Length: 96
Image: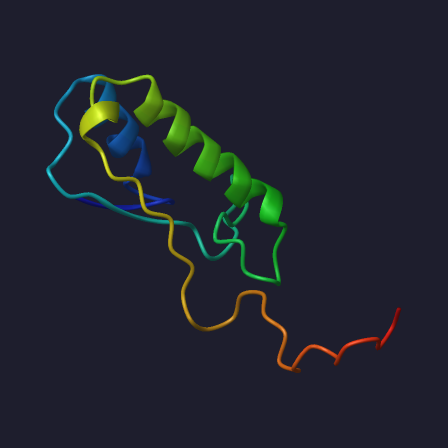
């Protein structure tokens, strides 16, 4: 199952509730705002709180389901964008 936040994600929650979840499910957060929702991708240009809510909803849905004991929940952040420091950390004693 492939569920994108702005079109198929409700199907994921329905499938868990109805015990019809696919063996492998890949969820993609919403990257751009729509008229009714905020991005949930946690990219730096947006508010990361909506992404935190999505992660919690997915986690809580799985924990409260019969799937929990058989589920591997992996949360990945992609390689571009995101939060990282492009400079090496300062040496010992710097800034202390």
